[in-house]
Image (cartoon, rainbow, N blue to C red):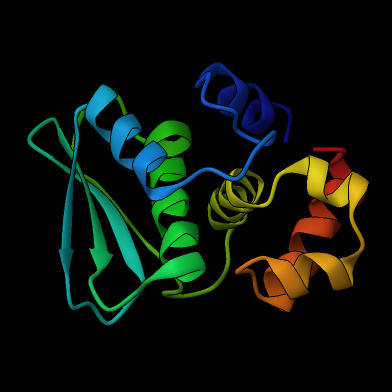
Length: 149
């Protein structure tokens, strides 16, 4: 988890300190030259690399918190798991949850549910005022309790 925290902070966009937005995601993708494609998908999204080009595909039917979580999950695959050369693909919610998928989820949850919320607000207040699911908040609280991020 240390590398996830270091990678998030190195982005210098407020990762873990404020809720990142779709604009933040788009800016980061432009900075790293990752092409984003939105289309109807059977999974929430996926990251892939072909011919030394990086792509993130997002299900065009997603919106709000669900879309943000998928966007940052797929960006995490690029930031944390992309090979230096060759083709690769990582699909959200396809198959068994591996360490790589857990890391991408943790990165995404820290991006969209900042630590400050967990330290300063009650669970009920967050659920009543923010566009987050109780499942995502519970998972984020687990990451905070276990890893301190």
